[in-house]
Length: 233
Image (tube, rainbow, N blue to C red; front, side):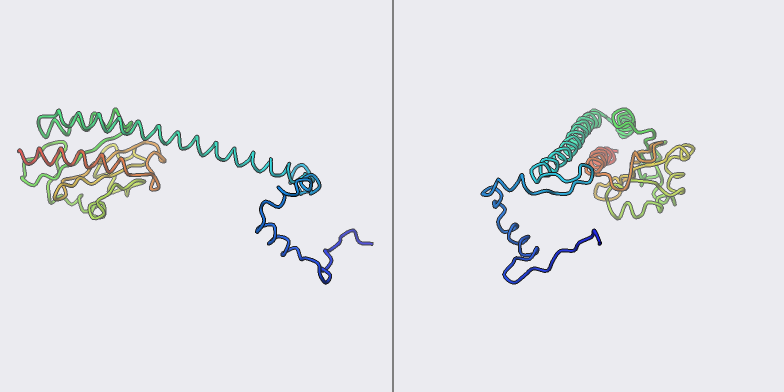
């Protein structure tokens, strides 16, 4: 005699399982009005065998609560990180405002980025259209290395992740082998002014899926300071 049974087909006048499911979906308060059924109904549980509907609901609510707590913790972590980034940008803006020359702007920006943004490598390259090189920050307008970043200039937004070897070599020079991830931000005024690059020895420090809002603000701040000093030069 087989121990396995199959549900019998509904007889005339009986509700099918699908009809019962539709009824319960359409009447979510049904068990509120028939609360005595909650202790009678039994549901399978993957680890505790059959449990009552109340117990199963409590289990689901606890798991949902744990998920919400994890999400809340992540939101708090992100909020604290954004607060710190805002403070760092504030310090950078103050430093750029105090700088009295283009050289001072670039030096201050590099120092603040190293200290406030925890970057292992910071590179600023300003396109020198007048031919008066501002070493070590300047790059000639016709430098072939700029072609490696044509897409960055066209998109006018930061690019994060792993750079191509040619890009790493042009930006970081002798330190290219130490940079596992980077972010490159184009500097724009009314025209391309140059590039800002932050490099990290950690492969997951800068990644393509990370938010770039603050990085965009960072590039705009630096571009504004550089553009003003170039106009004064």
